[in-house]
Image 1 (tube, helix red, strand yellow):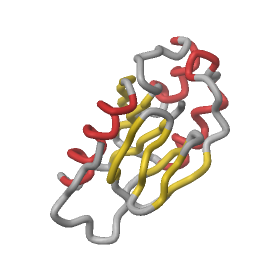
Image 2 (cartoon, rainbow, N blue to C red):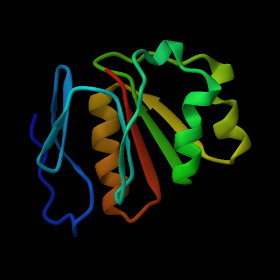
Image 3 (cartoon, rainbow, N blue to C red):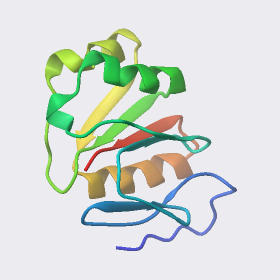
Length: 121
């Protein structure tokens, strides 16, 4: 699916997604990544169900107000204990399937919110 926003002001936004891929601006990703409107990073995550606390340190360094975790075509919750660092840092989070996380990220980004997105496949 392609997504179109009228204006991105040079920020990272989701421009499309499909089974096994997400497109950020003109770059197609097929491996896990983290991003904010200003930054994009490789995230060495293979399976959201195997996330551990340490995996969220990169999210905390981004210092978002809210973190969206896209878990692929189906919702897969990470272990609750792995989210402890986000809770302690006061970062709100939402776990969603990747299409929902992509759409929500674009909406929050367009509103000027301090949002981060993590995508796993």
